[in-house]
Length: 227
Image (cartoon, rainbow, N blue to C red):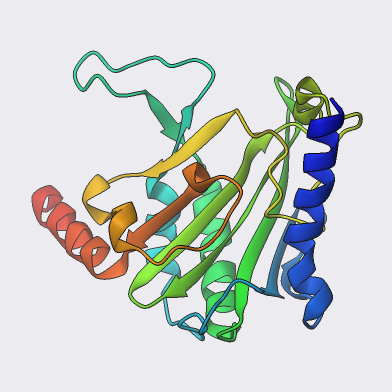
């Protein structure tokens, strides 16, 4: 227990250190349930490709393609043999977040990234958190899905002594074992050996998308579905 508590404390400090050494985060959008911010990224290296012009429609395609695969209940597909996956964002969330994330990327500086935090409440789950960040590096869009409909109490099952609400640290994963993130179509994913490494506590929650390939995949999909 002590090891995990110490790890959590170190992780919180490391994820917040960028804000401590740079200017305070600035909000692009905020309401009682959602916060979109731009914050300093101490791991930006020579700098991200910001400001970046990515349309709200492309951001919606990105959110639509984000998937989560459970790490605790591996249920392979009969056809592919791979773990089954679920959508990370609802259609409503895609339409709502798209314009705000697009605006934030257009206003971000090379030493900054965009973060998102969203509270959702359902009768079945109760309060849950979806949070993470994104930035553009070259022609690649990095999406960090730190939490996806994660209950603040889930970390307590891993010996954390209290609930965690990452409202001030949206890149902080509440539970480290719940899921990994992926993307469809898989042809748009940049292989690990072809991407710039952005250090993060869980690389399984970092999805890197080739924006040029994504545009080609979208065109092909549009062509196939056209009457």
